[in-house]
Image (cartoon, rainbow, N blue to C red; front, side):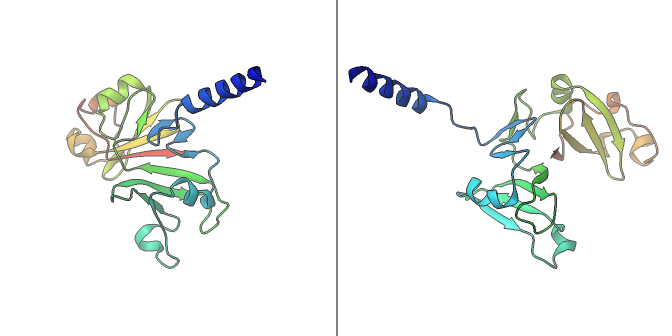
Length: 182
C-alpha cells in the first residue's frame, strides 16, 4: 500500500513540475497557443482570457474577408489570424501576423530584432521587391517578414523590377510585419 501511495505521490509531483506552454513561444509548428492544426472554433478556448475580434460579414473591404484579431485583455494586439476558409468554424488557421514583440523564436528573434540579428540566426533565401516594402524569405522556416524600402538604395527603392540583395539592407533595419504561413 505504501508503494502505491509513494508512486502516486511521485507521479503527481513530477506532473506538477512540468513546464507550462509559453504563450509567446514561436517555433516552426507553433505560435503561442496555436499549432498548425488549430481550427477557428478552438480559438475561444485557447484565448479565453483574451479578446477575439472576428470579421463581420460585409466588412471585407476594411478588415479583410477572413481576419481574426486576438487582443490581450489589457488591449495589446497579439496576433492577426487568417483561416483557410471564410466563416467556417472548422477551418484551420493558415496565416498569422505577429503583432506583439513578446513573441520569440527558439533562436531569440522577435518583432524588434534587427535584420542583422535575423540574418545571423536564420539563412535568408531571397528578398522580393514590392511597391512600398521588401519581403524577406527565410530558408527552412515557415515565416517571412517585410521591411520598408525607405532605408534601401534609391535604385531599388523606386524600381520594383530591380533586384534587392540582402547586402543592400542596413543591419539595423527592423521588420514592419512578421508573418507565419502554414
